[in-house]
Image (tube, rainbow, N blue to C red; front, side, top):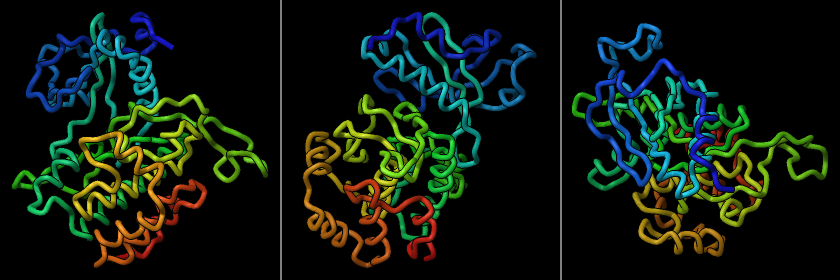
Length: 318
């Protein structure tokens, strides 16, 4: 359903804050509807503003209302604000506030000096992480996923660009022990069901409705999401498996970055034996990693490793 420009007013805002209260710095990211910049509260800023915004830089995410409205994504922006505002965990990017004017919606976010996991991989000479670095990333991601799942939220877009690091080392490289899960624009809020025997939500007690539209990055998206079936916590476990493979191999498990169609076909149609062989060839020196990845990218959601099983897996024990 299309969203009118006036619907953006549903986004909670702090009328005390305007864009003119901030000094704008460097541009960190530019997308079709979104720009992210560094920003700092002006010395003459309003005294009523939160203390978190004072004497420090933040990341200011600016979403163009008109462009989002044309692409019918404005409702996602409103949903992102509502979802992200609920979250408070050391491994989830902090939202410090949000406001809007006639043209844009603004998110005030924790500024991550260590950059993205994508950038960290690109900075490595072979484009991948060592096993011990991958373990460090996965443990923090499991912390974040267990937390958001307990809040009834599935992230649905676990790509390296959405994994940030708060701090950087002296040489500018990412401090991998400061992970923050970011960007809840594709997140799904799960409905609570009874979990009675025979129900579709048995076990988790939560499932998403069938009218979910795919907005996430295809190559890390679970097959049930691509097929517009029910989204559950297991959908994020699939994305985690794809991410672990990418960290250890430097390549995508499904398709290619240039062809979303190829990725979608591979996710939906690739034979399990061929998939296991592909994982084996990429991480053959790490048999525990092979088992973990294959256990996460099982096409049957109920058969995938859970977050608790990942935490207890031999690969994470080193």
